[in-house]
Amino acid sequence: LVSDNLGSRGIDTMNVSHVIQFEYAKSSQEYLQRVGRTGRMGQPGKVINFIREKDVDLHKKITDNV
Image 1 (spheres, helix red, strand yellow):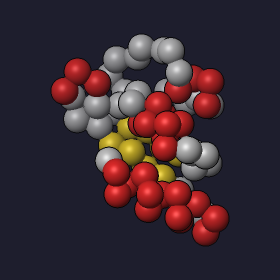
Image 2 (cartoon, helix red, strand yellow):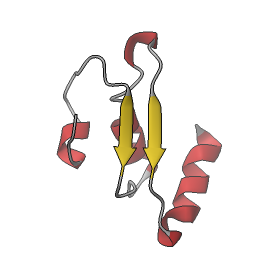
Image 3 (tube, one colour):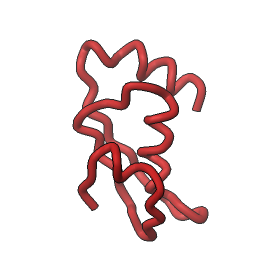
């Protein structure tokens, strides 16, 4: 599945094993909506983030709270 931010909301897709973020989320809520597409119904899932220098602080805040 390849999508943008719009696809991270309101779609219920099964069997998404990986979410790859080429452009990092702008907030923790956006991050959780995106990664919520994988690992549904107790299934395993992986998230891969490409993080630029400007995203490091937000990434630390989000991962400290997950």
